[in-house]
Length: 482
Image (cartoon, rainbow, N blue to C red; front, side, top):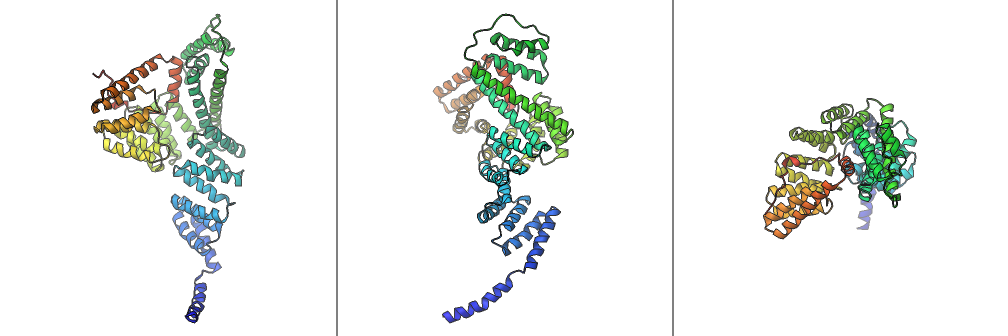
């Protein structure tokens, strides 16, 4: 038997060796793969690199090349498997970590993306793409300070990159918004809150409202030196009387300064884009964002349309158009925009939520429920999904499920009075009068809280919600329930 096995392997080994492709054949396939990449024929490139990678199974560089071709051929999950094979062979290669990070980010897995992109930055600290996409991944995790450091590093390496400058502006904006919300929580009617509201009013082009805010700020904080000059610059007269005691304002001042400085840095970054690249897609995106903040929907949509002409695959633009159309009361026109956004970002919880919301507004509850449940399967679904699902379940008379969704929502958004009213409706349908009354009490309390907010607080909170769109078109008007 051993003799027969030896005789078999003696015959089979030369045959196997003959079956191996020659170096010349391998090189030809590698050259064909590179040529296919140059003409953006990534399907062919994948086919050619598969031949090379099979012939050289221990070559990490060839595995990496195959992974890159798969990435550009939009086969992200297979690309990740190949990249991990390459990094197992050679952990010091840049491309597998970089492109694995990009793939994971596009699959809406920022936690895993961060791990790969951090390794890419460690391997090559001079790689602009690695820093930029690590910044994007940190942003997806809401780690704005960490993202800021990456975008700053990318700017130092490539100061002419408009995407980096735009990302810097957006990151500073988010840091400013977080600081603003903190200021509202610490000093909802404080002088610094009124001052910040005045600054925002000036930026919006409303000097009269800004003047009013600065005067209110001075009444509360006469120790703030710049308020008198701000009032005078707007043609007002500062009161001469001193304000109240200034004890315990250190934290308020620190938070205000953080919000103010972030706002200034954000404006500077956006202005740099405008000066550096007028008529670029980022320039028109900045204009679209500005018109959106000013509630000029038609002008915003026109700018975003221009962005798509210049860069059709830029994420977030179809969503921005759809949101502006919803604000204009045009859900049927918004629908194809949200569908186009989902095509660009098929793993985005936000894209599914937008579609769920527009279907809800259009009265298509089954379609809405389908989209919203898919949103919950994605990474970091927005809390608004539960409010929207609660409304769908109310329409479908699934009252217990509605209660569960509304309860989940108000556990995070405890100041949303309309959600408590909707919750009371669900409890009423279930015949749970005690819970219904408790929800109504919360509705009344939060409604009064809204009315009691200072104008400054309301103004700043509105600015921090400017990217949100509600579905109030189908909201039942609150009324007394007996």
